[in-house]
Length: 352
Image 1: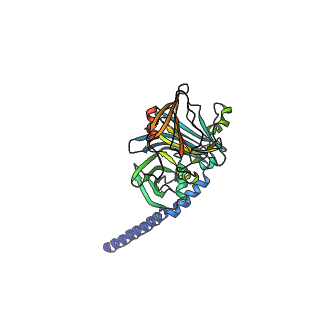
Image 2 (image 1 turned 135 degrees about the vertical axis):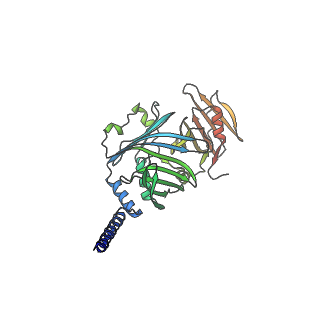
Image 3 (image 1 turned 90 degrees about the horizontal axis):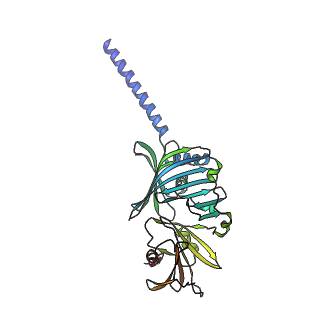
């Protein structure tokens, strides 16, 4: 009797373990995530998203140094957003009120206003939803299952950017599917890393979060309404070689490229921001001689002659030079030595 009872107990225990194993396998199957399912959930999340507030730490790497940024961003669907990017040297704000985008630096009166189609073309920097949208649109992407970072586990996905051949790695929160860590690579080199330190989805914001009052409404019309271009866009749209400085001062970066017209002459404008601000203009050479004030200094830039003029009242300087086909104008609050160094490094894209 005792032996029969033991067999019965063992059979019952084995049956319980089998049922438990089956139950766990069903639960595991129900919780497993495929890329197709992940993309469907992410698309639904984007479609239903009301808005969010987030704070990020951003690091941009270069061969010489790395730049650290603090980022705050607000999104109110369908078309209002605000991004604040700050460093120890200062910051830049990007605000879209649904009809136009203002880009400015606190403490400075100069600003840029983008209107019309430009508001749809501009992608605000470091925007979390921008990375998620890019993943959903990407032709080349992959799903790496669960990955651990710190004490948390995330869904890990990667995608290739269009045109730039960069690889973006996203660690997605398992509940919200927001990117909590973003890394961008070019080949094996890490270009930047973003870490989300605070995320508040579904928040309502006051209207003035997405408003900007320019310092002088009368100046808006005199500022160019720029159409932002990528370097690839500029090369496709600009009917001449595109020249780019190979050297820029440390802490400066290419902020935006625009194409405009002045006195019936097309010109391509590179705007650099960061620790120092300057613009680089290129346009076809005309028969008109460049204006030279009495205080202009003649300089040698490689094998070309340039003219340097300093405006003491505005603390700005201008450097003009030409290669007999194109003419170039460099303007900013830079030293003469830095301006000459930038000018000497200018080369047509694709030339050796």
